[in-house]
Length: 297
Ligand SMILES: Nc1ncnc2c1ncn2[C@@H]1O[C@H](COP(=O)(O)OP(=O)(O)OP(=O)(O)O)[C@@H](O)[C@H]1O
Image 1 (spheres, protein in one colour):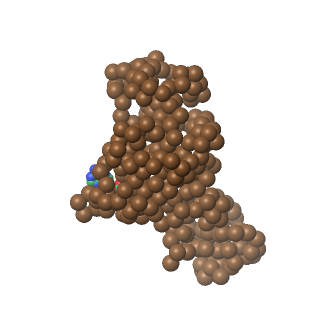
Image 2 (cartoon, helix red, strand yellow):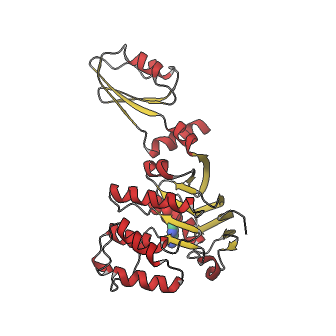
Image 3 (tube, rainbow, N blue to C red):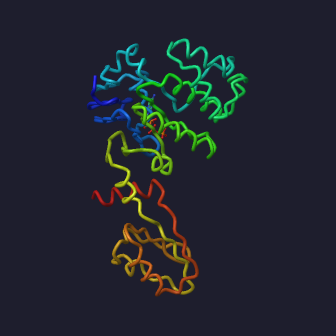
C-alpha cells in the first residue's frame, strides 16, 4: 500500500465514435496537488467519472490507493469528490446534507466539518434548492474534505467561488496535501493551477500531452506584449527574429508579441518604434497551449 494515490494505465473511454479519454497513463503521488488542465471537451470530467466508478472504462485500468476503481465500495473509502455539476438533494438543508453524507461515510471529524463551514463562510441552514451555484459548490467541497480522504477528486471546484473563497479553497488544498492527501484538481483557470499545484498535466483530445512541474509550465508561459504605434505598423518579420520572441501578429494599430525568457531584446527593438502604449499581460491558457504545440512541432 505505498503506490501512487491515483494510477491509471491505458485508461480509455469511447462514446460511439468519440474517444473521450485515449490510453491515459497518469500517476498522482500522495501529498501532491496535481493540476488537470485542458480545453473544453478534453476528457477531464470523463477521467474523473471513471476514477469514481461513475463511468465504465472502454479499456485500461485505474486504481485509487492501490484499490481497483471498479471495486467501488473499497475505493470510495479513500475518496472525496466534487463533481463538475454538483447534484444534491434539493429538499434537504445544507446541515442535513452534511449529516447524511457524514453518516454514510462514518468517518467525519465534526470539529473539522464545523471549521470548514466557518472558513468557507457557508450557511448550512438553507435548503439545497435555495443555494446559489457557489454555495452548492461550497457544500460539495465541505462534504468532500470533511472525512479527510486519501484522495480528493475535484472537477472545477472553484468555478462558482468568489476570489476570497477561492483563496480559502487553495489554503485547504495545501493543508490537505501537507497531511499526505492527494488532490486531483481539474481546471481551466491557469492562475489557480499556477498558485496551488505541484505538477500539472495537460490533456488534449483525451491524451496527456505534457506532464510538467510548475516551473516548466511557467517558463512555457512567458509574456504577451501589445504595442500600439503612432505610425505605420512594421511587418511582423521585423520582430520575429528577435531573441525570445515566440510569435508576432498584427492587431489594430500595432502588434501583439509573445515573448518567453528575458524581455530586454524585444523591448529594445520596440523602443525604436513610435510607441503610443505598451501593455503586458500573462498569456491565456490557450496561448500557452498553442506555444507548447508550436514548440512540440
Ligand atoms: N455521456 C456522454 N456521451 C457522449 N459523449 C460524451 C459523454 N460524456 C462526454 N462526452 C464527450 O467526451 C469528450 C470529453 O468530455 P469531458 O466532459 O470529459 O471533457 P472535459 O475536459 O471535462 O470538458 P469541460 O472542461 O468542458 O468540462 C467530449 O467530446 C464530450 O462531448
